[in-house]
Length: 200
Figure 1 (cartoon, rainbow, N blue to C red):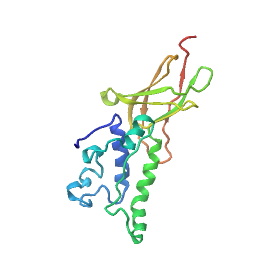
Figure 2 (figure 1 turned 120 degrees about the vertical axis):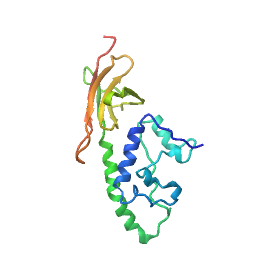
Figure 3 (figure 1 turned 30 degrees about the vertical axis):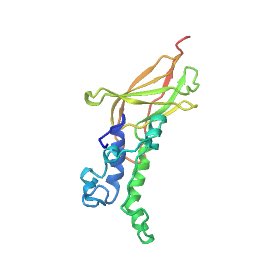
């Protein structure tokens, strides 16, 4: 069965896919599909995987649900093994798209979660609520901090409430405006949290 199946981070996944497709030399153009019944150029060069075909137990779903990983699939052409004579053209078609896609690692927010003594808090939960233009929607995909208290959260431009919490600590919520990246040097918004021990 095939049907559009959005994840909690559907907006971000669509942004990542669209970034690659629009920076590719032909991926987002109509009439370039291998099968005209699946001309993704009509959709800007992207599709929701489940609306195309379903996969049970895929690694992308596992990595998204069990870790802080965001993955997309790229279908680069009709020929799985293009001849050597076409490799240079394939590189030129994909080079800018790949560079722009890599730069998307810097969208959203990142920072540290620490206690009042400046010690990192590992496995703290980062929960995000999108409040852009009155949306008011919790993104039902929490991430957790590393052993050094670090976190990275991919988010598209907009207004968000970001909460850091861990058992034994008082949660902290910050309202953050994520601005569009206007240069490749732009980094994610830095948002640090200091959590107070609930039992002190």
